[in-house]
Image (cartoon, rainbow, N blue to C red; front, side, top):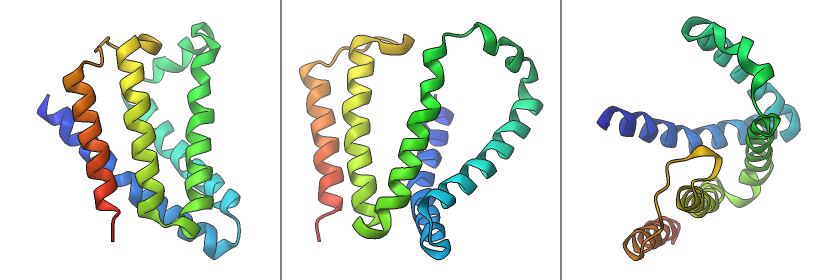
Length: 144
């Protein structure tokens, strides 16, 4: 379990780095949408290589999965496009703060109701308090 936590911490570290790099790419080429497209092409190639190395048989099962699961691609596109457009004007820290706030809210709801096949983990008073403390902590990091 500790290795899962460490991988997710590294993924979390990558989110603001991704936001800063892609926002700067968008500024330098004069097109946040083109910068997002470049990011997706690079990400596509990287994930394709990993998929073929780890589990190439997964592609053959795509025809059988519920089509609503592909909406995740729309959500990642929304995230990357919005952070690439907004971060240069709003600041990476501010943009990521609101992303984290949204993640705390949606993660709690997904777990509480077991949405999308997630393990059910009800929002108890203790858990709600912990989420609130996390949200306050994220907010405090953005205060000058």
